[in-house]
Length: 437
Ligand code: HAM
Image (cartoon, rainbow, N blue to C red; front, side, top):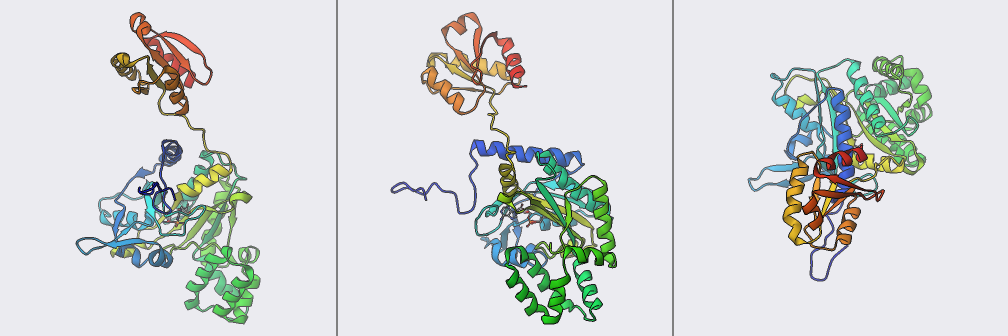
């Protein structure tokens, strides 16, 4: 804790981040790349307030999020309010509110800030930004395929190669159907009322040790059925069984079409569940394959019934949420974060305060040439002003004093190469842009 004697702590609230200009540079890179990719796929941006009525989350999302992770409070008018822990119920609300006017299919995206009261750790904070992309109004597999393809293209746009990540795929219908089939092939039946609990257990499987997982499954299903599930519910067997199930046919179609479209790093993970209750079909998660950061990066899936919340007709929907925290961890692990460059092209350093006016007027004229310019009004020595420019990674410095004012000729210095060019006012922009190109 950073606390000066008698002062407040300068630390941010636990589990949230401050963004200094260099952090914002990276953040902006993430958001710009995200926007660029999704807009190329025809997605349109929407937004909404971070405050939502608490009821929005209470029936159809995730028990863990609602009971343990929401930031909720009662406002001065007695309304229960929640800081959104995810964007999906919000976007479903927006669609429900204008369903008649909107022309489906919709391709929508947003990059909201979302809040979850979690134990802060690597990849898990109490606030993060999350790119949300969703297609509304398409029930065919083409939408599932596009969404997964879009997730893949985003990873590629950030410089990831196929070896750096893996897309794990499953289907909410395939899980119970294969479990029932497995049970019936062994002359047993799978108890429907236990499905929800088994799915929750599967969701935690990766974090549990094998023995603990085994005993929890035994406790839930009884020894006989549990043994069958534990012995046979694995990728190889499930792959054989799914072709016999109804949802399996859709699932295999999606898998095959994605492979045909050139995605090679996709695997069927029969234990992938995803924590939300609203998923109804395809579910997927993108994983980092590196040993140092072997974790889920982001995920999503199909949710065709969330419009129930608002009492309207169903709208088939598929989408995903890509968090900036996990994405940044991935990019750092794979050395894919671009080096910081200042958004300022040129730093004007006046020889003394008597040249401030001249410097300001020159800056204003040069800005019309589309240059980004800061003038140093500190009154410090030129060498110190240059140091400041250097520290801020501003690529060019131009000193103004008596000589410059008299002649209209300027010494433009590129700090990285130390190269100096004598230019007129009209030439500054050309030299800078040429060097930065
Ligand atoms: P989610 O898996 O809960 O899904 O979150 C999506 C992504 O947000 C995660 O994979 C991770 O990148 C990031 N994320 C979640 N919680 C945290 C946290 N505490 N700290 C940092 N990053 C986090 C959803 O939220 C779904 N609503 C996504 C969706 C959209 N499904 C369909 N459409």
